[in-house]
Each structure stands twice: as C-alpha cells, then as structure tokens.
View 1: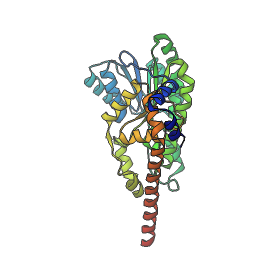
View 2: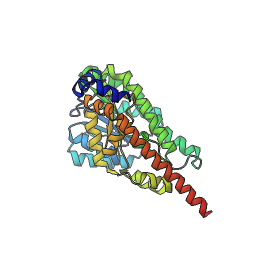
View 3: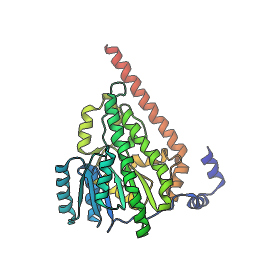
View 4: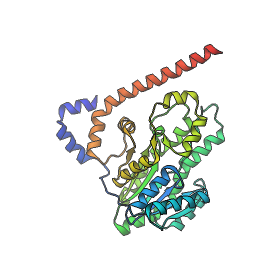
Length: 326
C-alpha cells in the first residue's frame, strides 16, 4: 500500500533518482584478475566450476575441501582448463576452526572469499535425527563463521594495501529464502546465513569489503543425487516442479554477481522473483533493482500467498488421501 501511494505521488523518474541517492552500499566492481580467490567446497560441483572460471579470468585460486585425493583431481582439472599452474589446495573440515585458520594462513591473504561448502539431507523434523540436524548446522552455518573469522584480518589489510574492493560471498539456497516441506533443518541453516550476511556487511563496508549472498535452485551436483534419495514424497511434489540448473551456469551467475558487488545474487528467473519478494531490509546497491523491489513488493506478496495456498492445499490433500488408505 505504501509503495502504491508513493508511486502516485512521485513520478517513476523521480522515484528512481531518489533511490539512486538512497541505495547502500554504493555499487562497486570487484576485479578477479591478478587477485587471490579462495573457494570452499572447491573439489566438485559449483565450487569447482567457480574456481575454474575464476582461474580463466586470471585469478590465483585456492580451493578447500576435506578429501585430499579429490582436491588433487580438482587442481589438475583447473590447471588443464585454465592454463594456470598456481592453484592451491587445502584439506580441512570447515567445522574445525583451527584447521580452517591454518589453511587460510597457509594460503595467504585472500581478496575474494567464497564460502561455498554445504550439506543437505531432506527429512521431516520429527523423523530427523538430532545429530544429523546439528551436522548440517555445524557445516552450513558454523563453518561459514569459521572461514570469515579466519580470513577477515588479512582481507582488511589487503583492501588497504591494494585500494581495491574485496568480497565475501556466501552460498545460500532458494531454501534460504522460502521454507519448504522436508527442509526444516536445512532451511534453518541457510536462512541464518542471510542474517550473518546482512549484519556482516555493516561491519566490513568501511573496509571496502562487499558481502554477497548467492541463492541457487537445485543444481546438478553429486550432492543433489544423494539428496533425491532421501527426499520425502511431499517434498518432491512441492519442490519437484522447480527447474534445476547446471553447476557451470550457477558459477557464472555467482561470479558475475560477485564482480558487480551485489548483495543478493539470484541465479534464474524464479530466483529473481524470490529476491524481490524477500528483499525486506537487505542492502541494495542498484537503483534499478531497488525500483523493481519497491513497485513489485505488493504483487510479489500476492504471488507468494498464491504459492502458499497451493502448497498447503497439496499438503492437506496428500495427508487426507493417505489417511483414507490406512
């Protein structure tokens, strides 16, 4: 309602000009060439695709994962596809703050940190083991804290030294924008990253570091294959209609967003609509995107209510049908 009244009072050009004044933080270009890009979960999937793409653009890439053999295979693939020999590999579990700190010290100061690690096991909360829930939270959330804490001091020194903007990119998920049946624990771990990112951006903007949150949909990775084996039937019904993406396509969208200093990085059309619908109080550096958020907020809320109606109707119908079978 407020947005509609504002549009009646202010012509679109005037609103756009006002938004250009209001948006924060200011837009920035984050170069990759000649800089150190550190990527977790870099031995496969989206992380490997991002590392390869960054190396092709002239970045010195370091990747972190748990499995040493897979890291060496990934290093060889990145070297082959990018022609760069200076690919660093670091074996550590992101749940181990000490191991993460040692890996970052070994890698050297980072210009662009990509927290791409993550695990996902879908199941209804009542049926899911508490240790499995804790495992997801420890990796997805606490692992991100460990990385940022370890990397920040040297990152701040680097931006002062180079006078170039740095970046901390956090891989969330569309399940970190909207809750879905069977994703209770996973969504909790991914929604938390939003709060982390929003508050962190306030803390590091004066150090010329830009925070980005990436929200991919289902992506064709080895992890997705494992997830499908555990998905509840209702989750498949509700989420199965959402289109998936290839890891290389997500990597390109993610890197383009990082280089543009975007806070929210959607990866497809559905993600862009979710970004508008869930904009809330998040930072926004683009006047055009801010304009779309202002004018689209009411429409997106209506669309969200339609989706929720459909999902609740599906859940009610599913349980009613199964009850009759008992």
